[in-house]
Every structure is written in C-alpha cells, then in structure tokens.
Amino acid sequence: MSKTLCFDFGNTRLKYALFEDDNLLTVEVLEQGDVNEITAAIQKHQPQKTILSSVIDHDPAIENILATNSSFHKLDHNSRYPVTTPVGKPETIGADRLALVVAATVLFPDEHSLVIGLGSCVTYNFLNRFHEFLGGSISPGLEMRLKSMNQFTAKLPLVKPDWNFPLIGYDTRTNLLSGVILGMSKEIDGIIDEYRERYSKFNVLLTGGDMGFFVPHVKNQIFAHPNLIFKGLYAISEYNNR
Image 1 (tube, helix red, strand yellow):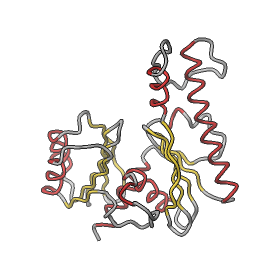
Image 2 (cartoon, one colour):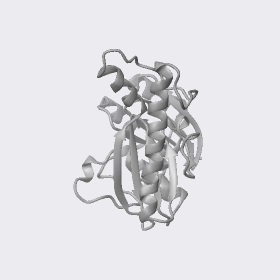
Image 3 (cartoon, rainbow, N blue to C red):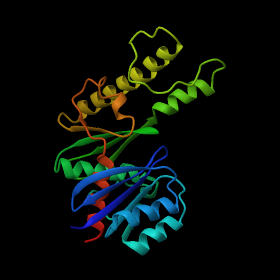
C-alpha cells in the first residue's frame, strides 16, 4: 500500500493526516510544527508521498525534509488542480480554500457545492458543477470575534468557546456566547439562502476546527465533515503525482 502524509498548517492548528491509498487512517495534531516533529512523523509512518498546505510562515527547512524523504508537493497557485480558479490573482487564494473545493469535487462530482470552512476565519467557497471555483467570501471566525470584544472594550472578558449556552444569556459570558455563536449561525444560514436564490440546487459542506459549535444551530441542510481539507489535499497530491 502507498502511504501519503498530508500536512495542514493553519493559523490556529497544525495537523497532518495519514492515508493508505485513499483511506484516511488517522489525524494527528502537531504541537509546534517544527523540524523535529516533522522528522518524527516521517520516521514513524515512512510515507511514499507528502503534501503541505500552509497559510503561515513555516520553517523552509520543513520542505527540504519532506522533499528528501518522499515525493513531496507544496500546495500553491502553481499546483495543478482538477478545478479552475478565479481570474485575477490566483497566488492570493488561500491553499486551504483550494483544498476544500477540490474535496467537494471528489465527494460531489459534477454538482454545485458551497464549502464553508470554520477556522480562524469563516470562508465561503463556491464551486459550480463545471468544476469552476468561482470564489466566495471571508468573515471573522469564532475566536477572532470573541477576542475582538475583549480587546476593543474596557470590561468585556475573553471567554472560551462553549456549545452549552442559552438563547437568552443570563450573565456576561453566556450573553457573549449567544451573541457570537448564534449570530454566526444566522450569518451562515443567511449566506446559504443568498446562494439558494441564485442556484436552486447545491451541496452545503461544513468543515473546520470550530464546526462542532455550529452544527446544532444551522437550520439549512448541511454535510458536516471534520477532515474535509485532508480529503482535498490527498486528491491534489495524487493529481500532481501522476
């Protein structure tokens, strides 16, 4: 069996997934994402192929390690994709967004899909049935909103995200959670409804580290997939290793 390690370096979390052929076996969180951790992962799994999606300024030595020990691909605007990208400045498109729309083509080929990534930011990514990534929108993520209310006010505290809160907050903490999480849920539903006015039929895929806080509150029918980005990364790795 062929092993592939897919690395996802996001603004909040650094993770990798192990695939044997096209079967996702495990997802691991990296504490630092440094050379030592990457080397340990390579030694542990002995992959034939690796791919890196990074939206941060990572140590360039990591790429050298991956290239030395595997057939390595760095995801960027020069990569080959089974989708087309918006005109303009393709080099400015986040690698994570590209991986998400590619995953949508794998799961729902020849269908419209709206992929919503819930991480440091909320990204809305629309892919039509002709495999054209048309773009979308970006808004502040969960922790960004919670931190902003703490940083830009004199007395509001910084609260940790929590799924357990009432509609009508009874103290400052629950008021903040209700306002942010329910407010974002209504935003998500509203954006989906806007797309529905233009495209009557499409898939809605919800993913990202904060997905669990919103699944109970989003009213539209969705397909929730916590590891969607890794499905996309694996597909891109295969596409570029042909």
